Length: 144
Image (cartoon, rainbow, N blue to C red; front, top):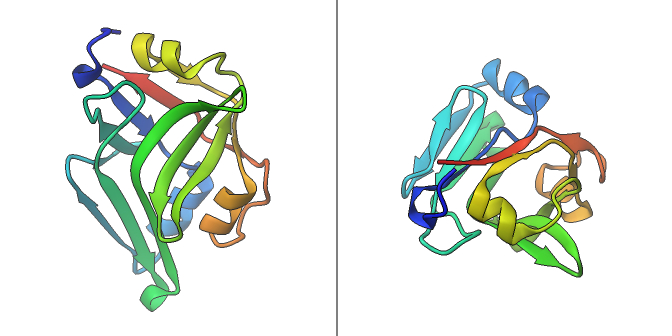
């Protein structure tokens, strides 16, 4: 991985079962500002500041009954815990705890994969209550 924050990307699939569910629906996935859909999930380019990524992904289905937005994700340390926060339809929230990451600065500088990603209470609400808080989500990767 490079230490150039402009060369890093955040890749996260949220959860494979969520993506599988969407495949069988009348879903619409819209991206903007550099975010993209790739096999295995969503990718956000660096916003130019370590830990901050730009772009957004919005998933809608069921004539709008499902409406999930993930925008401008940030990997940061809050109260000694590395978290992923993002703008959602409810404002900026902490979506997940990156439980096996030791610090946000080294993860965003050096890159790597976080395997133990746990959905927060706000994250569970963001996904419509389909997953319980502290449900293990897909790994999250910072890469060049």
